[in-house]
Length: 287
View 1 (tube, rainbow, N blue to C red):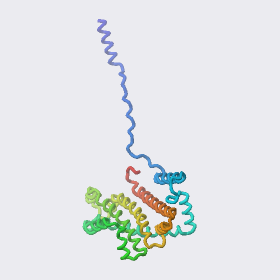
View 2 (view 1 turned 120 degrees about the horizontal axis):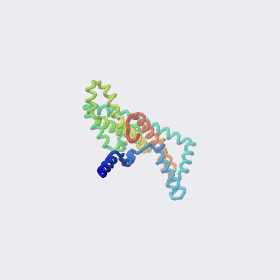
View 3 (view 1 turned 30 degrees about the vertical axis):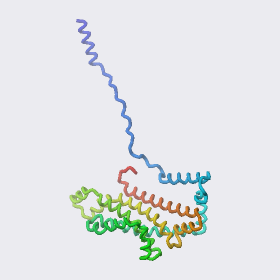
View 4 (view 1 turned 90 degrees about the vertical axis):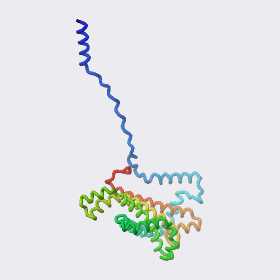
């Protein structure tokens, strides 16, 4: 009797005693897959590192000063050219040519892309011609444009405009064609007019592609300018570099190349800044 009672009490005590719960180890924090926060002045890290390696190699005597002058030599030459008044004139002339050509190319690219991307008739009339123009090397058109427009400034601006409008057209047209058709159906259900459809659906959907083409067009304007300013020009950075080649002035050539590089970097950074502001509503890896 006693044994039975003791066993019963023991079993009851065991049943009512609190059971120690073994907690599972806390789940390790998930590693983020995004690139992370943008580094401050990240666009300048690469160029500054390149300049540091260039200066170190020049100071160590690893570079031939006649072929690749030291950075301080190039900066000294740039200062002399600026003091003489030669460099400011050449810089302003190059900026003017690139500006006119870029403005014409931007206008042509946007107008043609809109006409081709929003209309089947426009696509039939325009897209094939643009694709044919894209397949022809633009710099190969220089002799023909000289015969048509003369050897003055007009043909240079026309060539720059062609170089600029092609990437803008291609990227904007691709963005317009890539808009999801469900948005079109939604706009039809909502009863949007064509103007409202373009303003609320087409433009926001095509802006990312437009900015890609704009960046390519800005870079293309500077790349084409290097070649064009060496053809029957009397001023400009390309002319300055061509004259320096005849006299073996590698430091002057590097001055021109560095200025072209700075112009390209600054203009591309400006376009990217505008893109981030305009497309701030997007959540992408870049932001």
